[in-house]
Length: 184
Image (cartoon, rainbow, N blue to C red; front, side, top):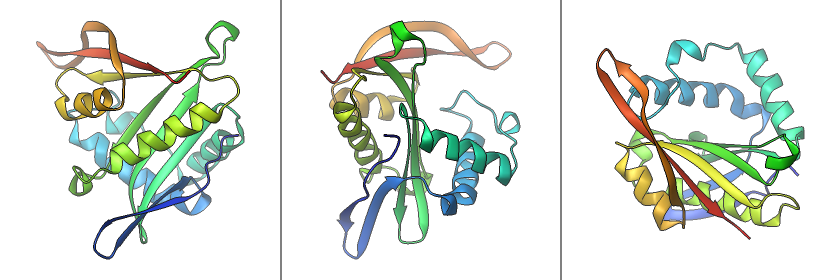
């Protein structure tokens, strides 16, 4: 169940975006996009140096994700270019197995075109069809107003705030906002 049937969208003249489950051919571009997004430093908790993995390690990790029934890895491709991804992980403990959380990233020059919305809507469709999942959680930097607008527009509500949860530099902190949406 960790797979998603490909869907294609025409979002600009001559541009077809395909959202589908991750495949082996996506490993290298996914690693590069991940490093690119982490290097921006203003919206992700993980630092680039904390995410140093080999192609082989990444391949094994992605295969395990595809094979797991409560995990989903989506990629967004425009032609040969990987422009975004979404990683969803369902909780493993029995009392939490109805929930899961995700992270999402879109290449900087492709933001504002609706790709994040399409990735997230694809996840919500998959979760609705899943036999045990009921609730999708996320944590977002309080300073990431664009992402917060997207999440609210798709029905996510704020459930709490973790004050000074992320230390960006000495004396510089950002709050994390916990948001969630029930799908049933």
